[in-house]
Length: 129
Image 1 (spheres, one colour):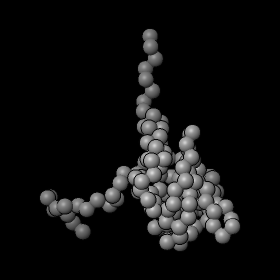
Image 2 (spheres, helix red, strand yellow):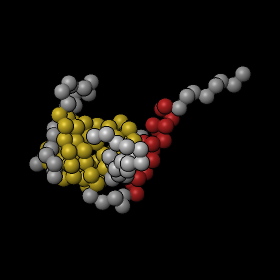
Image 3 (cartoon, helix red, strand yellow):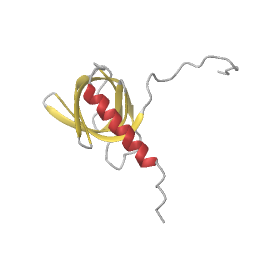
């Protein structure tokens, strides 16, 4: 579709995604699964994992990062099978939406991840002479 100047382009996502590398754990059917959180936003996150769940699957996910661990209830909204095995052996991705957006702990995890990401890409400060 060709857009003309002045056309309103609807935003693809409601919230900015923050890249991260956090761990995730959740339990279903008596089994515990692990995954790697690839990005966070104010209303959800994306996990790379070996076990994929269908959209609508809901559970309590324990996300942990540097000095922070947060438990959130979330529901799978989309899934994607990754064709090549990653270095961590995790073959699928799932997008999840938080059931409640009132978690102060999740907001803290989001802020910590955002600051860590900014520090990781910041140029090194010049050494003092």
